[in-house]
Length: 137
Image (cartoon, rainbow, N blue to C red):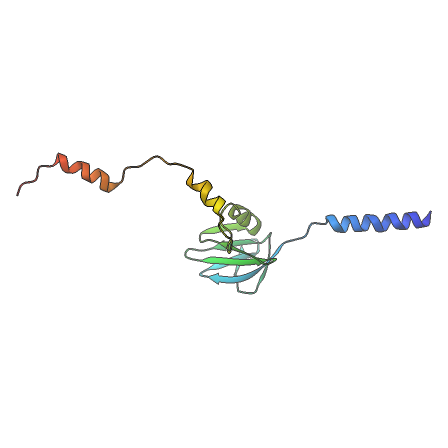
């Protein structure tokens, strides 16, 4: 009976460890411009290359600034004028192109099948307007 309880306890410990949520930590690989993170409520500090940031950290990427992060061999970039938690900013950027990703022929073929309606531009409107103006020489 004691063996069964011991085995069950070890089994439960392994199951809990397997399903434990792994907290994502990002290493700052590059910073350009003014990039800050929230140390405590209302207090901000500069982000420096080599820092480790949690997904729960709030960052503020200023005008003409970028922040590049590494996680498990993948690189992520946060563009200028973004503010919020890293987890929110990076989940929003997953719809875009990841740094170092490759374009496949399927992606190009799929994009080329979409058609768009033609739009008039300033040059086409100006060429039509020439007929309305009488030129005197």
